[in-house]
Image 1 (tube, rainbow, N blue to C red):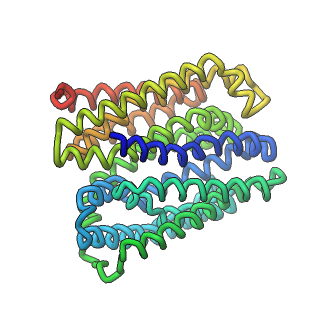
Image 2: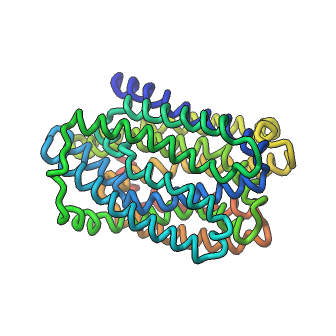
Length: 409
């Protein structure tokens, strides 16, 4: 337990930069670029993050588990690394080419083609991202160094280069450049430390990975769609201003949503490892860490609710009362995620991928349709209502699937 707490402390330092960076960047971007242009930046970022799912192809979960289980077997570990990185390289090329074609052909994208094309380095950064490897090996020190390095470079580029509203097209480019630099350095380090070699790369292994991960990849598409479609739909059915206003509110709560997902990344490898070796210890570990995490999120959301106007005023000076009201609805999403994400850990840890995939697909399809329908009538508030209802249904269904295991002492 002491070792895990020490690793969590190291990991937490890096994630502190993830929490602080938006607090510094968002007010500056809104001030320099305006709410509408900030909405365009957010749409471009959301699409890039959605496309990252195609590059990862579920390896951000499956490869973490494989690395965690086979961490003490160098030959197997090297084969997993070569296959995973090779698959991601192929998918990066295909995804980038298709995306470029979509930008050229569709007017909604083409009118902001400079913004979208300059966001492609984000995808390259995801190809180089070795987080899945470091998570599986529980090397949280390197993850922390990588996180801090990328955020520092990003901050320097933003504050040094974004000086006028027209500079909004470069924001996502700077995010990609920062990640490429930090991820590339750590990836080279991993090559040398673990003696990885492309001799372990085999085309047949890529085919096997694509086949085995298809179900997980499909579920990740729908999860990503749930996360990033609202802002794109608001931009398409509403306006860039609505997308910007939604993003200001979401940027406040996304700090905690991101933290929850990063906490998942910290706990998940150990949960997978313990499930394979000691089921009761796995449940004890899962309950203790996720219980503490829920208490932290609940306290944070209570603070945001009570001081919503003050928090919103830090990010924007326009429509403070309306935005604060939206924030009070929005805080329910991370609070419920602090329950649904731990349940997702158990589903995947126990190998219940099909159940997870099927449930996620159904819920996301309905929620996306409801969001599209609700925007003309309820605008941003309707989006949050749908997201809250979706998280509640997720918790209910996941708890039912895991009812026997959750009763284990």
